[in-house]
Image 1: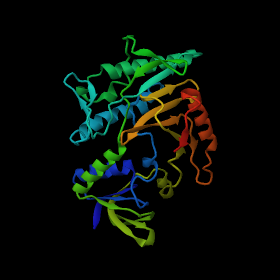
Image 2 (image 1 turned 90 degrees about the vertical axis):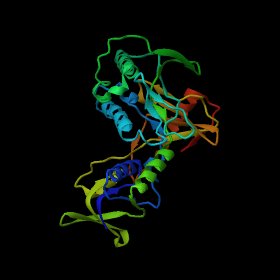
Image 3 (image 1 turned 60 degrees about the vertical axis):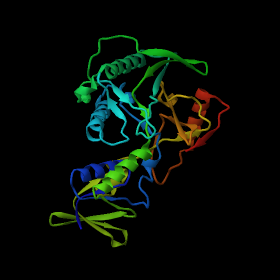
Image 4 (image 1 turned 120 degrees about the vertical axis):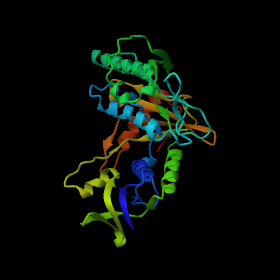
Length: 334
């Protein structure tokens, strides 16, 4: 069989790409090198859905614009999925509908900004963050094209949008955001179900070794001489694409996570600090009604297969977690 598209990489990016092409009427095959989908990066993360808040302090607004635009895309292309519970109400406010099975959890992240010893540069960045969140709060989401407005509006309204929060004797400015936890397992399940309903095909254990051109087609050759014939190829395999280009174009980074049980706090917090190494986040999840915390930091290292020793990152994160949440808690590496 000749496919219209072969999607290389069975993580969330590959699954979402394959699903939307299949839904658009194309013959699509999703090829994954492992024996299961989402076995690598897509299976190891916070389950934190970003609206762009984390990047609103940057002078370059590209990352913020892309993430805000993703909300428009989500509302446009996925609004009819049964479990997609992000909606716009009659007043134009973006709302997470609470339901038993849902993509997004109605427990939004709160950003905390340390109050002591801030430089003028950091204070200015904080004001930029506050201004952007006034834009988030006041925007009418019925208009669409939010990425053309939210990152760039010069908001002259200086109404206070924060309150004060104390954690372990430290005081912070607390800002509500639209960021929220997500159920990535359910999202992946729903996308795969729809992909298969539209006659999409999945090939696991397909480790792509070579691509050959034949007339208007591509012949994808995997291990054991397994072949796929397609008109076009889309690479969604992260740094794996480097094997098929002249120079390295994608770099991988590793950032440690900790799991703490029982949960350390009842809410989801992102603690922002002028020193990046002191930034830390706390996400609450539950399994069978039992809550636990996932802790992440802002430190990361470039991934190198020959040297993946990141003990110093874990050591720093554990110490930061103890300083922030308490010495008596038990933290487990993820």
